[in-house]
Image (tube, rainbow, N blue to C red; front, top):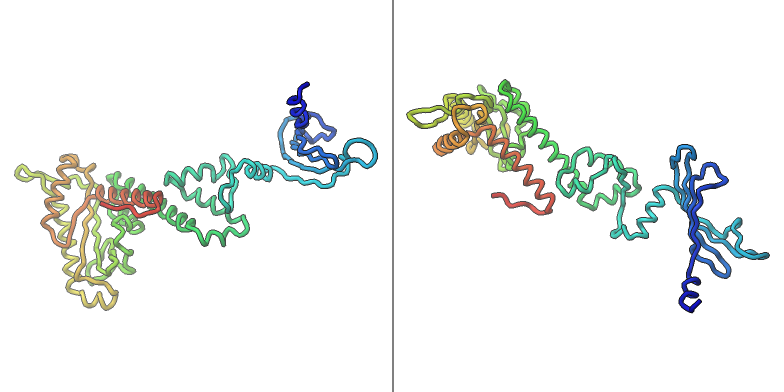
Length: 357
């Protein structure tokens, strides 16, 4: 035997695997010698406990021990260790993660089981498709960790959770509106109920709806919005199913009579606001001199006599000659709301506001 082989043998260590044990609850035992010195012996042992008949593992235990050399006789005293240390199940996984370098950053870590409510959470956050159910599961798991609430106060997680929940609520509202618009039997009242709750679809420049809808003596608005500068914006809602949204007149596609009646109604509202401007400003703190009205009416899917391009062009021409009133379809409203959700998702991914064009 040459010198190199002797060195290899000197560095050899003992490892063992046993499938049988005097303990009927032990399924298997694996061990490895960590250190064999003149005065102490160190080893690590991994045991699986469970049912021998079914082979089901109920618990895994990792134990480490230090054993002194016998005072009388050869070998080490394995019955009377100097010290021992044990950990079970998920504790073993934490030790393994430590040894494999998985903790690159300090902080709190949550164990995620396959099939649990948190499974796939990281991928969902990266894709911007984080759902409210996943956020709820995350919060419930974190709440069980001591000190996490205080730690979260100095992070952006609270803002992330709030933004995610709000975006999910917006998606739900948009889906509800789309379904209602597609149904030709949906009434104005049904559409109004949805949009009163999801007034955000009209844009981010509004701070909400007014506390009272009845601002004039004779008229009651469908959805009165308030701009950030205090000006009033009146929304007049009509049905989505308007078959005569566009009609032919002298070889031209023009908006039908339902649109003209709706616009006349909106203009009457604005005239009433102008007459009572001083009273409304004093009582409600709203600015009516710059009040504006939007009429939401029809959808190209219910107007089979003309194409979407013809409807869009007729609306463009009509709106270009209006003052303080605009007309949009439910298709325009839905598309704008969908773009708003998309922009907010992109902002959360990048961490910076997305420039809107």
